[in-house]
Image (tube, rainbow, N blue to C red; front, side, top):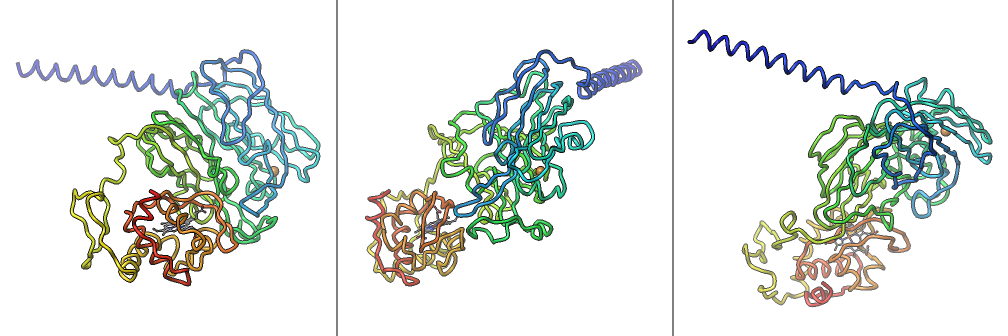
Length: 481
Ligand SMILES: [Cu+2]
């Protein structure tokens, strides 16, 4: 009996192993499928789009011959308010036009160098199997056109860039973009698709220094950029350029990093990537918070948006986001879903050392009568709140940080209108504001504070650092909530 049992186990083990081997074998074959021999059927013009848009999905179409016309333009553009930069572009945008193909396509690439340009350029596409990724066949002088052709045989999301010497300088000036090679049958459909690409820029003036800023080779070599941005400029994805979606939709971001130097720790504040094509390849990672995108690399991130709100795209090397421009927005509209995100349920001040206004759990703000406070009491409490909530951005003496966080000390903006100041704290502030003659174009998130807390912190600020001594009351805040 024992013996038969053992034999049986042995046999089934052997069978299992054989079976596994068979499965593995067939899997392997599938992965290594050779697309070099796929025949193309028919011909069409490739659709090109500028960021943040992408051409329509390939769907079920067969491999085809794609005629692709790309024009190189050297042109002046805006880096941020009052700051100009001479960009070198593929197709007139930074990043360059998005190219969408399917595996097996044969691309006939026409690279045109506009006659008004000053320099020769070429293109190295990481999706190309061949010398220089096309660079060796595509060097083209101003007023000329070069044609070369290639077959895309590996599915994935790939960077392309100029590779003309000095290569770093051509990339630093914006000469990069993405080419997508979809697998057979296409990527799984989603509701929204967008194109986002990070790049670092090196200017002779510091961040925000006005005027036309020439490229700074020294800073580029030292890898100390003044700007790190999405889609070629500060604020490309804010102030009307926000990406949008509706609650319940699935969103796909094709994210690239042109560099030339920095690696991106790509993150969306308040979202988790349901799936990520790591490095733009075929391996899918699930439930990712931050994905690393190398210079000259890419990733495809998919997620479903379940709650409304503004979700902030950042390079989580976070000073780049708040001080160098690597910040974008995804605005999601629709019905709240309290199951997934409750919003603030309870709020109160936390003063570990003998705080006077702690609240008991469950006590609702509405029921608690706010005690009458003297201006001096308000200033005291307000100072604590400032030190925990506002100070990180506006700094300890309300002096702010040039070009990034406006001052609250002697702020003409603050002193001109206390209602506006209250609303700023209640609802946040984005878009351009001018404070003491300097422009700011950044994001202040809405602050989760009670009427009383806002009254106290503003009274403190108005009674400090040379401001106009306004007293703000909880009633004033309530009226604007
Ligand atoms: Cu170039």
